[in-house]
Amino acid sequence: MKALLLAAFFCVHCSFCQTGKITTKGEAENFVKQKLKYKEFNIGDSSWHYAEKTDRGMADSIGVDYWKKADLDHNGTEDLFVMAYAETERQDGFEEVMILFSGKNQKIPVKIKLPHSFFVTVKPFPKIISINNLKYLQLTYKLTEKTVNCKEIKSYYTADTLFVKNNFLVPYSLSPNKIDFESIKIRTSNCFGSCPVFELIINHDRTSSYEGIEYTSKKGIFNLKADQKEIEMISLFLSHIDITTLKDSYSVCWTDSQTAYLTIVYNNGTVKKIEDYGLAGTYKLSLLYEYLFKLTEF
Image 1 (cartoon, one colour):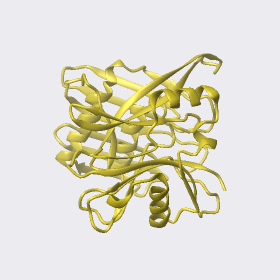
Image 2 (spheres, one colour):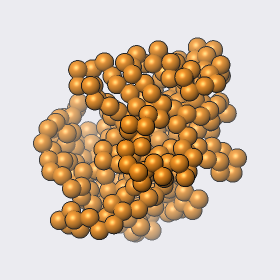
Image 3 (cartoon, helix red, strand yellow):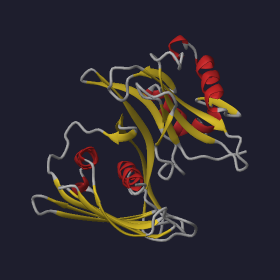
């Protein structure tokens, strides 16, 4: 069985959850194991998080929160947050890095991905922080800059601030970019496997189009109408990521991955294009990809 890094949220005020009684790490572990049927579930297991001395020092310096009660979707209901080393009952024993969240009116957990593609080779360290009397999840992790030939230049730690909205993990910035988008387009390539190949275009006036090409649930061309909340979510992602400051091209240092081609037209005439081989250019970008991929499941 392989290991996975997992974070989970559960509503603590609803009667079906009964997490309000949880006061220790062991109680939190047992609760999650029972609800989700994990073979093993160990919060903050050292064999995963403290694999390297430098990582151990960073985790200790920021005071990592591997489990804590906090309202991370800002709906007035306190949640239980946990991050753990776990084993599944599946044959390969592997799942994506994810967050599990049960909202205020939900009776079952809803999976919210971190997503896993970015943290394949990176260990994120969680910390619950307060900003303007609201709780946020801060993930600290190490980035390694490399040349085009994947030769390491330098490594350093960075951190992203996040919260939950509409069952998605979204980025937060103290100085968001206020420019509205006119349209956003994502096109994906093949990979060595069954990666979904499609093109999705969404305009600010809610008109949109989708073409499913290969390994998609729907194939062909569809003219669609986006919900207003989807437009607002895209605006939220773009404003807090500040796409205009990112590079035009990113690439992971391994083969057989998928490429995402992202084009954003802003209402001031600015156009930003990003080619991202591996869909892991930045962590905040990977969260946007996760949301756009979900919109293709109509």
